[in-house]
Image (tube, rainbow, N blue to C red; front, side, top):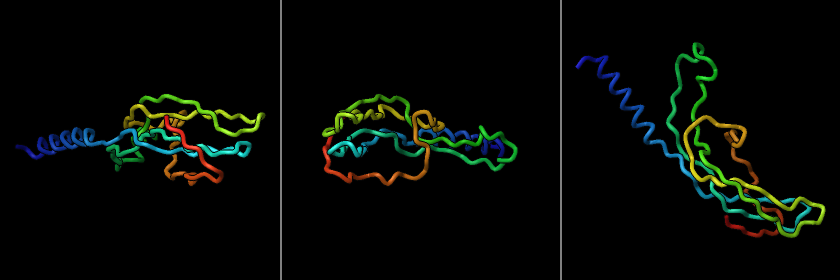
Amino acid sequence: MKPALFIALLLVFTLTVGKSMSLCIPVEYVIHVEKRECAYCLAINTTICEGFCMTWDSNGKKLLPRSALSQEVCTYKDIVYRTVLIPGCQHHAASYYSYPIAVSCKCGKCNTDYSDCVQEASSAGYCAIPQKRRSP
């Protein structure tokens, strides 16, 4: 077998196996919601997209347009929203909170219309006031 053909077949195999090895799935996540006007913090069990997506980094970055350089991330394919009532809110406060539930996920470009595309997690993983738990 000629070396060029072997390298081409190896590249096709690597890309095919790499895409199938991507692991991007909905996982359980707890959102903590609190407002100053409400007596309780609400801990909501939901699902978010999390996982590994195969990607590659081009050596010819200066030759390619910027749009060709974005890497794939694990992001939402299908989402549903639920709305809950935060207990103990004062009458003038907006006591309803809507949150997303990941139904399915995909590897693709991060869409800032409905995704948080930052690389660092927020530090608000707790409640500062008494907690009420809510499941989807």
